[in-house]
Structures are given as structure tokens and as C-alpha cells.
Image 1 (cartoon, rainbow, N blue to C red):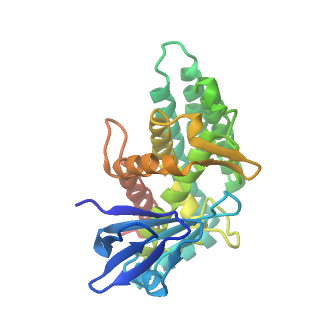
Image 2 (cartoon, rainbow, N blue to C red):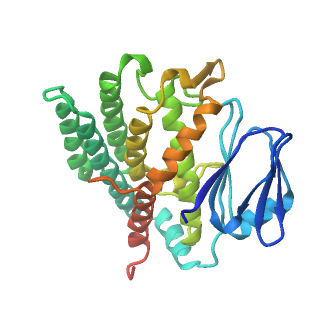
Image 3 (tube, rainbow, N blue to C red):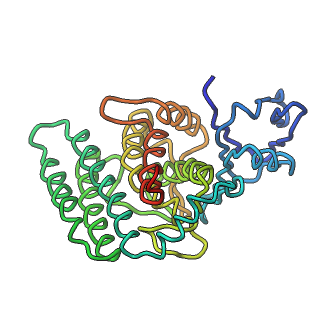
Length: 317
């Protein structure tokens, strides 16, 4: 049976742990739901459900990551997971690499090369109408990708990545139907349905990445392309960069099952409505595992992105 993503999004929900490692979820007027912990891969929490302390301990012991999302879209998500793996070899290599400007640049360049290559593939996927003009956009991103070798430092590399992102999302704005109201990337909070889907999907992918890098003994806070910044999972963001195009393809796909009416917009931003979350998470669970022609499953993309970094840290890998 596939591992599950469990969504806890009701304020009156009480979550407890039964003997034998079974998660129990109770809410007024409903029969309790029970799920064995060994079937759970990730937990998403909205709002203020009542979760017992031994549940959090069980999640940590089994390295089941929890992503805590603000109920009204205000504030940053929080991640909870197990402590760092006792496998310290990769972590020592990670710290050395973070202090080595040339090696950090090489790692960052490889991650952004993969990201830009993925963006080209996404635009080709979007370009269903011959002569729509998207080919010019992916050609420009391809030129930037080839020019990455000229980046002499991380600031220059970030400039290349930013230029490609501007072209990429400008093409999204040009091609997406007007009803979605997408004019470019925005966040904290997202102001339209497309940005709401992108932000939510990146956050959930980040939880999966955090789980993977901690299992490998890597420190989520120490990155290469993303500079050391306090209170930020720089390594998670590094690994996410090449994964974003796979997530973007998921967003384009789920938009075919949703409409702008499935979102709530207020001064706190735009958020997916509670009834539509089921559709979203069901589709996410499938796309995490499903390989499409030319498009890896999101979980496969995450694993490959982690491996790309470890190849730099461990010469014997």
C-alpha cells in the first residue's frame, strides 16, 4: 500500500496515539478514523487541531515530517521532523563545502542548470499551440543556462537564475487563461489562485525534502546557492530549486481539476478552499509517485536533487 499524506485541518479534531502505533482522529459527531503510523509519510496541519504530545514524539521517532500551515495564510509554514541522522560524514562535507566559495559555486551552478533545463521542459509542455511564441521564451532560458559557466560568484549566479525566472513566469502569465488572474509570481501571501497553488506545493515538497536530507545526515540550515541566513532552511531551498519544474507541472495539471471559485481571497491572501483541498492532496499523492513520459515523479526528482549535491560532498559516492 502507498504511504499516505495525512491532512489535519479541523479545529475540533483530537489526534491521539493508540497502542500498536495507530493514529486515532476524533471529531464531534463522527466515527473515529484510525491509520497505522507505518502507512504515513507526511502530515499537513492547518489551523489548531488538538494533537497529543506522544503523537509528535511518534512522528519524530519515525521521521514523519509535519508541515504546519497558518490557517489564514498569514505567516510562514513551520516544519517538524526527526533530529539529524547520526551519519555525520555527509554533514562534515557539507560544512566544508559551505566554507569553500568555489565548491559552493559549482554546486549552485549544477542545481540551477538542472532547474533551468526543467523550466525549458515545462514551457515546451505548455506550448500546445504551434507558433505561440513560447519557443522564444525557452530559447532565452536555454541561452541563460549555457551562460551559467560565466558566473564568477554566487551573486552573479543568482542574477542568472532571477533573469530566467522572470522570463519563465512572464510566459506563464501570457499563456494561462485570463480567468486565473495570474500576472507573475508573488507570495507571502500569494494574491491569486495560481500563486496559491505554487506556494502550497513548494511548501509541501519542502517537507519531503527536509525528510530526505536529514535521513542522509545533512543539515537543513546549511546551503550553497542560498547563503547562510538565520531561521531559514537554506539546504532545503537549494534542493528544491531543480525540483520546482516538476512541481510546476503538477500545478498546471491540478488547475484542470479546479477553478478560481475553489479559492478564497481576502486581505490575508488567496488560499485553496477546504472542500478543494481533498482534490489537491489526492492529486499530489499520485504525482509524488507517478512517472509521466519525460517527467519524473516528484519524489524521484527530490531524490535525484539530493544525490546531485552528495556527489560533490563525497568523492566516493
